[in-house]
Amino acid sequence: MEFDFSILKENGISVTEGISYTGGNEKYVSALQRYFRGYESNKKALEDFLSAGDMENYSIKVHSLKSNSRMIGASALGDAFEELELASKDGDADLVNSKTHLALDLYARVIDAIRPFGEMEKVTAGDEITAEEAKETAEKLLEALDDFDDDLSAELATKLGGYPFRITQRQKLKEAAGLISDFMYDEAAELIKEIIPTIE
Image (cartoon, rainbow, N blue to C red; front, top):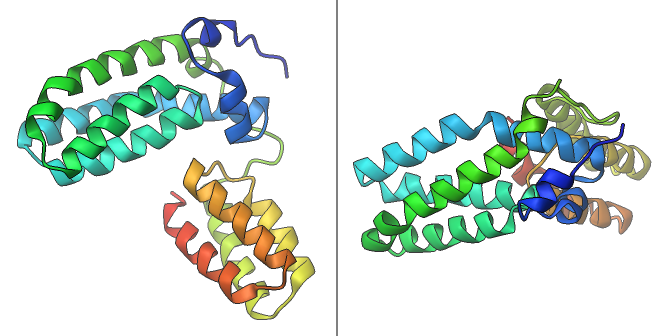
């Protein structure tokens, strides 16, 4: 499927970066659509945590937004959220209060830029799997690792790669696949166990 990414590039979103993180044009558009759909609830959660002075949950939310923004190639927004994450972890309420609205303004501009993709019919990549399939695949992968079945483990790790993980989890899965090829099954299993709770 062909997509016109020019509006993203015009708005400072690195399509090249987004595609490298997500693994292809269709996966990238699917990620843009998920990012778009989460906007209202994420914005409300951030505002609610800020007004309640809940720095712990605020920090967790901006961490997630930082990773997701970088995953779609919106690195300036990712940097803005990272600054807020560090400030909230340090308990710097003044900086958090003074800069949240700037980050939210930038967030709104990114959402406007990706709106054409967010409002188009849902795009699913050929090898993309659902959360339910991913959980089932991950459990089968743990069993295969426990049985030292390298062929099945490698096959299931590849299938699990069809789930739209965030950057950190995608890197862990890649690392696990490398460990499987080196016959380091226990270490690979530990990484898979870390990934499973992020499947939602």
